[in-house]
Image (cartoon, rainbow, N blue to C red):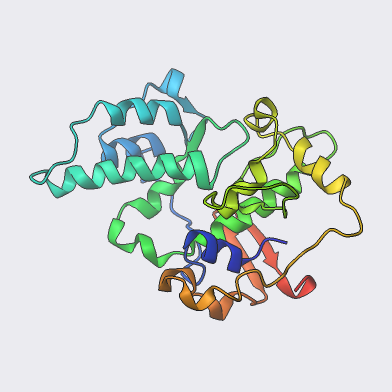
Length: 246
């Protein structure tokens, strides 16, 4: 089981903040697309770059961002903020909350990007973990042939030699078939689990020897690492019960 400790220690994502939940909807006459334009000045092509009511194409954000003037010492703060929001949407949709298409990001995250100075108040680590839980749950359904989420948190103990400077969370991708892995296929992960032998080793306290040497933001949430609580990501709620495996 992947835990809140894994999320915070490996990636420094806060796990003890406010839940990533909101009841916000755009004001009457406005849409999520107009909110995107207001906060970033990006005006998407609705026919080609918008899906549904609240999803925007990641590639469209990247192309628009590449065409903006670079940030320099004299750049106005409002322009810096607009750049930041675009980068964060790309990180959310392309890394932390990747969906099965890998091509779109939800504009509902704009609620949390309105006031960037409050961004660090939220439990982004908890949201990443519960989103991955739900994605893995969905992927276990027999008819489903893809899987999504923040895969860097999946880290089976390798049986092959690894370069010492390889990031620990990258080990799960070593040896996978590139064509399969890039399509977010669950088959390689099922293969690893199905072929585990009796001597497979699971270490439940892998960070004990290094915990005191970590940066403060990688261990600030120790008080909730073993909590029994619901984890929340927008409309997803999953029970977090580490006592079942620890």
